[in-house]
Length: 119
Picture: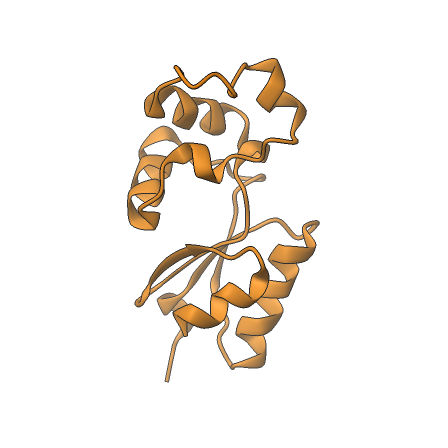
């Protein structure tokens, strides 16, 4: 039996994809640890660890339609990984969601059905 401590959902309850991933987990009897990354933003160390766990560059986890993305010039390919992580730490809305971490790995679950790959 999977316990709630086995799954962590980096969640924005206003996001339909995030709500969808949570619903899919709950339908399968999984109550994840929910991280409200907007209410309690991740620091640089936490983001660095999460990005490493995902195995993706930070650039692939950015919400490019957020105003801060353009305002901060994050589309500049010369921006380093450290600069991008620092920008997300300062502006958590830039982090794409939902992100789910489980014993089987970690994924950006867009579409939300990707969470099923982790069960």
